[in-house]
Length: 399
Ligand code: HEM
Image (tube, rainbow, N blue to C red; front, side):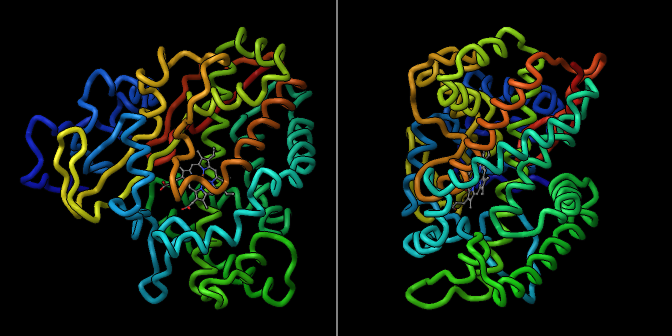
């Protein structure tokens, strides 16, 4: 894929081909790479990479401005997934702008609120323990296959009201969709997911329950039932949004835990501080980005951007803004609390953030309770996957 041409209004000194997402330097150590952007690049620059062409923001303050200024920055058509031209659905709520966007959020926000997800706590804890039961006595596992992938997939199935016996099939689809290097394989997985969910929606229409799918199906927009296309786009997006992000976050954290025994012991010794610990780890291991398109011309930090320009906040880099988080790469559980950008912010801030925090917190608690000492399999070097969600592909652990 060729880079998009750089528009005339971009000054040459602001053009940087940083190789985000795809360069060997990025893939060797993505979080170090993103922290170093603060030394290598101006706060706002134009990236010419194939994946991230457009304006890039790396300051905490600038990213929050972008995320909170929906009147300037639209999310319409913002995601890179294929669509069937015969059924050009929107992925919801992410591709809707305010004020319509709020109505989609209202459908599921109560279920995903801190109170709403508490009903999943017991299920998540039991599941985490069931998964650990399967590997504990073996003294080793592929963490990604044994825990990182099945945990969020199973919880997704419970949340939606879908059968647990679909877990392995969903895991397979998720892996192919999000990581196959052959676009034909990814395409097949995408259509398999779409096909399955279409059938499941029909089924829920006949047999509603209290899961997320039934809530979406019964959702009202402007006092009218949500259209079949929007029900579908909402359901598909939940699948895409919730699986790989939690997976990558868990893999990043466990890679670091395996390499930092003293920090592991500190976490175990401070059970009452688990919320702050979770938040600091989420800051340190943010996995994704927020992209928008400018609706109107704007000037930020003296940089003139034009309507139609693509703008992307590199959220992990914003979590490493040294003005906000001094010594940003160090993991410090006593850091002064500041808002982190791992789940973005503003109207599109992650709907699953409370659920993700709960899954990760319970994962940390149960794993460290049962397998407090572990390390990377000797000889293993982590390889990070190219793409919009940053994390190591595989993680063999021994204990
Ligand atoms: C650690 C795990 C997760 C991370 C890092 C993450 C990150 C994000 C980010 C950065 C956005 C904003 C995208 C944008 O600005 O364009 C977002 C939106 C969203 N996320 Fe998550 N997410 C995670 C887990 C989840 C889970 C578990 C779910 C589902 C249950 C979920 C559902 C959503 C939805 C529906 C949106 C769109 C919100 C909107 O457009 O209003 N996410 N997520």
